[in-house]
Image (cartoon, rainbow, N blue to C red; front, side, top):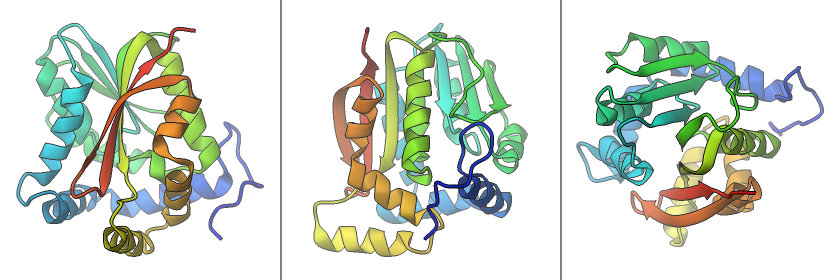
Length: 236
């Protein structure tokens, strides 16, 4: 079984997770963008399916002039750049990504003013407490073992200001059995399959609430294959 919590490196990341993730994205980063576009073309209404799904999440995030927005596990930077374009230079968007290969792709893209990227482990984001107005996590939590997901969500809670909003878009377990079976079959070829299954079993909203957030609303998209959650940092 891929998941093995016994071996670790400093920083709390299980050894298999670091090596699997870095090896996987070392080559997958070259085809990641066209892969995502193709997948969402098929399951989210044809041309523009990826942009629609991302924009729906941004609409819930509601970036406004002057906001500081953190895009956690920013990958190839598509979402980070879209948020930056919406702010149109009147705010700051910071993408945090651990994969050097993903970051190389992101940094080659044309970026609006106010968009930057840093390489960092999202379990230990090197940023001050309560320093961001809003945060986004798009399609990343299913890649993580449970203990890593919870650390990442706790970090999102830490860096957000009181009452700050978090938007998470993730895989969903459709109510329809044939859809659930189809999506499960497609994920079996993915090295992230065990962590994907564990996330679905734990429940995305449960894990977000476990980190201290209040879930404001949820929605399913792309024929129930994806779910989006808007949550707010509770003032303790």
